[in-house]
Length: 316
Image (cartoon, rainbow, N blue to C red; front, side, top):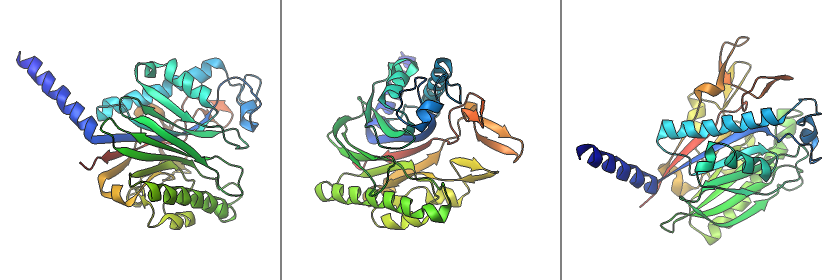
């Protein structure tokens, strides 16, 4: 009887915690393509059975399993599955459908929000959310002016108590061609994000959580555009030497959560280094994320990015 009462108490405590908080996650999955060449972009051909990577059905489903295991690791580590997950570098809705329906994630009630973008590599952003945590109210896209790149994805979600939240998924242009030379592209993407947030703030006072791979650290020039609109939850972690990618032996934080001012004191961001998806680097001694490929060589990991999480403690 005592064991039953303790178990019931813990169950009720966990349920109360889940009602009073939201666990959000973001992860750049680095070229999450299926094994079929559909002619949708440069990387689609590369990641096919006849392509340069010799991508295969077996390798694709191994990546799906590793992603699923990572989300289940979150449950072991934090006591619950993420309520909302934003992804970057996914090929299409189909790869997420296979991820959610052919792995252990099929036991959970995730729904997909996704739209195809005009990116030349054929990669998109997407969002999944648990139906037990939220219902989808609306969704929208914004394309940075003058760029052929990933769209910015917005989803308005409502929890069972009727409280709304806005989630925005970003993957801003890279530094390809040079950091200074590409600054304007990232500024255009950040301007599009700011305009989206300004529009949402006019019609709703619901908290805004923007997440993504911004391809620059918190002190990059583009971040000045959103000062006063969104608070950067990555700045403090960056200042402590934390990072989501490791390049030439140095950690850098380019994956971040940005939140509206009313959510700033209610949120906390962390970088997750999942043990079975880390590897030791010999050239620059230290751990780094285990990628799917090291150069042309298949090594069976997921991404060169660590996932990041955000706790949001609801203001009751």
